[in-house]
Amino acid sequence: MSTVVTCHGLRKRYGPAGPWVLRNVDASVEPGGVVHLSGPNGAGKSTLLRIVAGACVPSAGIRRLAPGTAVGYAPERAVPPRTFSSAQYLHHHARVRGLGAAEGRRQIEQLAERLGCEPALRQRLGALSKGTLRKLVVAQALLGRPGLVVLDEPFAGLDVDARAAVADLVAERAGDGAAVVLSDHRQGGERLTCGRHWVLDGGRLLDAGGVPAVHREPVRTTIAADASDGEVVRLIEDGWHVERVQPLGQGRVEIEAVRAPRGP
Amino acid sequence: MSAVARYLLAQHLGSRRWVAPFLFLVGGVVVLYAQPPNPVLSTAGTAAAWLLPAQIWLALSFLNTQETGDRQSLVANAGPRTFALGRLLGLAVLALLASLVTLALPTLSGRFERAPQADELALILVANLVCASAGSALAALFARPILRGRAAPVLGLSACLLATIPLGLSPAVATARALDRTGAAEVPGRLAPTIAAVAAFAALALLASALLWRRRE
Image (cartoon, rainbow over all chains, first blue to last red; front, top):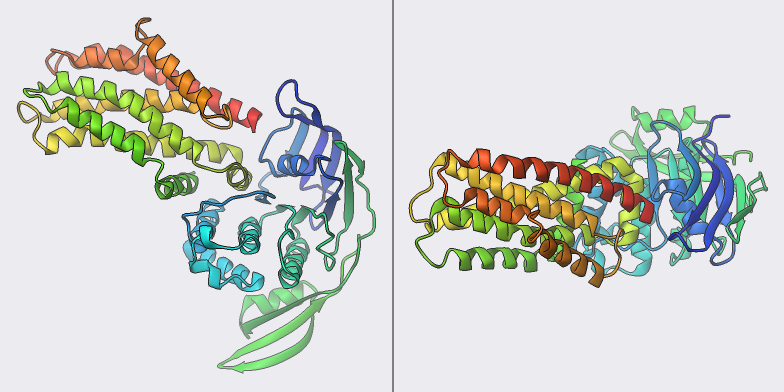
């Protein structure tokens, strides 16, 4: 199977005399794969994710991204510009991804609604709570439906509902064919279908195999759409099972659909 | 590329880190033109020289505004090449704005001994851009993450500025001399070597800073 990103012999240290943070890491992620990266503090998880995302270069080794693949990266400690409003911040990232104004606005509103941070869109980033900032940083990584999504501790500081929403979004992106690599100390994505589990310790990848997912559940989604809307066709074509259809009036319906978990 | 530049410029504008170097630039130009008669090219050459340290400060504040995690997410999302080009575009916009301000202040307030002609205005703008480009390129070599502290860039840049004067390598001095006591017709010939040297230096410095920055990230 083709891979979205392949890493071979990755080594990294900060400064010419610094200790090796990563030592000969080989790993790859396929389209639609969700990789859960774990390991103790200082194992090199954030460094590995940075390299996988292309935010920094390894000291040695190769990181190869499939041509034309867009990347969405949410670092663990991102401090977005405090003077921007949340909407400005996301619109800027939408433009960086090449989204038009209308499409950018649509995706931003959709993500904000899913993550429960719609009221924050008009507020300055400097006035937001840690959890809301985290949601926005994760949201910017998902804008434009990138082919590779790299999330460093995406569940940190989030409440239960937000963690579930992020897990659902990640599962949906993977269902759409994106490769997802995420780290999570607290197994916050318990509803997430993790196809693989990477364990990093002392800069070495101890296990990059197909360890079974921590937990598996069907992915559920609810959309409101016109009968002619392409979204409905996409749902059915993608193999979603429609469980409930609720007329909303004026030709619009609310559709609740569920998709069975994918295999590892 | 333009989206990255817009992001960085909007962030810089909101941070207000540009205020101090901008006041440094404007204050210097105002003081310089305070004493008449202010011959057009000669005084403009000195103002262009003043633009060099001001632009270094402005460019350094622009390059250092972004927080590390935010920069890394932008690099990953835009791609390192697009990010580097976007930063370059942002620097170019700042250099152009600073050059225009340095030209507009004395022109609009009528501080020259006579109204400058169109060809003189064009030459002054070119001279300003030469110094602003040199300042931007020099700042790029001392910006984060290449140098992380505050003291090292200030000391390094000051040493560079001071050391280039006795060595005859200062673009500020060369530009000021090219415009000093000459007619407009002679300026292009006198300024051409400085333009070529600054263009070569800027290209090398910006390439080196892009490579070093990727290694240091």
